[in-house]
Every structure is written in structure tokens, then in C-alpha cells.
Image (cartoon, rainbow, N blue to C red; front, side, top):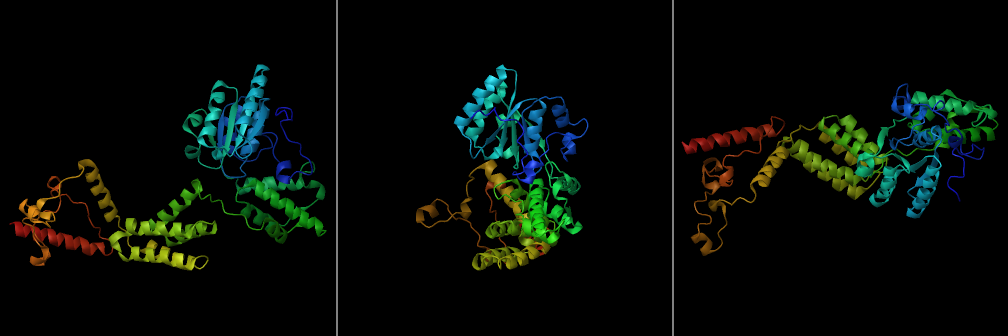
Length: 442
């Protein structure tokens, strides 16, 4: 089949899903993304002038990435070839290149639209490079994942990255209303309306995804028509939509965004926000043990000795959720999250670890002082191993005046307890010990 024989815009037949039939054909029909398509904005200027440039369109599902690629190609009179990571391979790319070279000789450009480009591996992405460089192909890649992580640097440097935003509720309402009233491509011939509470539900549950909203609207309209009704109700839309999975890709950027919000909410002592982000992860299918492991790390890093029990609570929550499983395992996790978020905070131990690690990196393996070395043999004792070691229990306050660090790090201080929680006592204890040592040196 000739990839370039089909018309650039798919026919809007009645058998197509409503979301496909209502796909905008021009920038005039396109709703949203004003930061890219408003007067004087880059994308409107390119499309309006019929100019082509390799692009990476990064945005959430249903924000219009595919539609914009098609509109841009049509505006320049270019052929638009859709390429899929799932169904297309090297052989298909070679065929596209051959036909694109023929079109180029005829003075017509070819846009290669690569949907979900992040699913292509490094080698596959490398295959696009020479043809993009020579101008044989204008590449427009679409991705829901951060291209900084998912697109190879050489390809990324040759493309303009445009960030699409989630469709706002206001713009989504316009799209829904247009679909209901459009007699050519939409539901206009059915003369249906939608109840206010149904409309509000649809806007809320679609979460900015136009495809989800229009698919649910179409199914709701079918239910209304079957029941001989002229109004799409809330109950019909609830039945049509069921439950939309939360946008949360465990291998993608949103995974890191949500876990970051979770940790930072606990660090900020905001138990309410921390519980919300925890439930966002669990409801989206995150492994509860992953959440528990992050809580164990948090307890040591951000609470530390301000409340030594925090680590015990976190480990206990990990054991509990492993033992109980879901859904009941959410309960001990929630208890632990509330405890960690409201516990006094100190990262003094964490900072001490980093400082000590920096000295290890800077100085390498410094020699252990002779008096601290173990001397299990007579030879080692003869060599001075363990000589002059002071057994702390033999001294007042169990504090002996001796150095425990390598000579090169004499006097170095890593751990500086805060005034938070139990660490305040540790701070006073260390101060007392320092004063005791000074008196013994006098």
C-alpha cells in the first residue's frame, strides 16, 4: 500500500468514534493551548505560514498532540505519515524514506508523526537522525513523558520541544458543547442535551483528557437514546465512564512527581497533603512496599534523632503492609504517614553522613590510629597495635581524652544535633562531653 496515497485527513464517517470525528481540522477549530496558538505565538506562526520544523510535542493524554501534528502538516501541504513504536519497524522506515525522497524531488515535504516516541529505544531513535538532518523528513514526535529522559540527546537537539498543557475545564466544556450540537460530525442530529450535574461530572472525571470526555459522552448519548430520552443524565455518564484510571505511570515522570510531592509534604509537616499523595499512589496501583521503603528512608533522613522512634514506626509499617496486604495495608501506612509528618524534623545525621563521605572521597583510606587497632597476636602488640588505648568505662563520665579519627582529620565535627525533639538532649550531651574533655586536657 502506498503510504502517501491516502488523503491527509481521515474521513469523518459515522462509524468512527466521536472523539475521532470531532478531531479539529484547522487551527480555527482547535480549542486550548493558547500559550502555543495565541496571536504571535510560535506554533500559530509556523502553521499560519505553512512552515515546517521538527518538533517534540510533550503533554498529557488527550491534550491534542496528534491533532496538532496533522494540522501543521496540512497547513504546509505536506504528506503526514503516522509511525508507531508498536507496529512499525526498520523496514517500514526504509519504505517511508524512499517515498519521502520521491516526494522531496517533487517539491513536497513529508512529516513523520511518531506517536509515543518515548516507546522507541535508542537504536530506533538513532535511525531517524540522518533523515531529519538532511531534511528528508520533518519529525514531529508526541510523548506523554519528559523528553529529557526519553528522547536521545542528538535527536532532541534537532527538535523544538513544545509543552502542551492539560485541557482546562473551560475549554473542555466548549469541546463537549460543540460535540453535542455539531450535526455534521457530532451528536447534533440526535437533538440531545446534557444535565448540569452530568456535565459537571464529565468535566471533573475526564481530568483534561478530551478523548475520555468525548468517548464517555458518546456512550452516555447511546444509553439515553436506547431509553428514549433526550437528555444525557448523570447516571448514564457514570455508567458510561465507569472509573478513569489516575494518570500515574510507574515508569514515567508522573511517578517521580507524585513521590516527590509525598516526601516534601511529610518534610513540610503537612500530614493532610502527605496522606493525599499516598492515596494517589496507592489508588493508581503503586506497590505499597515502594511507598513504605520511601517512608523508611524519610524517617532516617528527615527526622533522624529528633525522634528515633520514627524509624521504628516506618519499619513497622513496612512489615505490616507486607504481612496484611491491600486494601487493609493502607491503614498502617496511613498511621505511619501521619506520625512521620507530625514528628519533629532534623537532617543532622544525614548531613553528617554526607560530610563524612566527602572526607572519605577527598582523603581516601586514611590509616587507622595505632591505639584504635585490634591486637589479637603478640606480633601485632609488639608493633604497637592497641598501645595506649583508653577504655572509656574506666574514666569519669565514661569519656576518655583520646582521638578516634585519623590524624589528618583531627578535630573534625560531622554530627551537629539540632534543637528539635530528642536531638536537643543529644546536643546538650555532646556539649557536656566536649567540656569534660577540655577539662581533662587542662
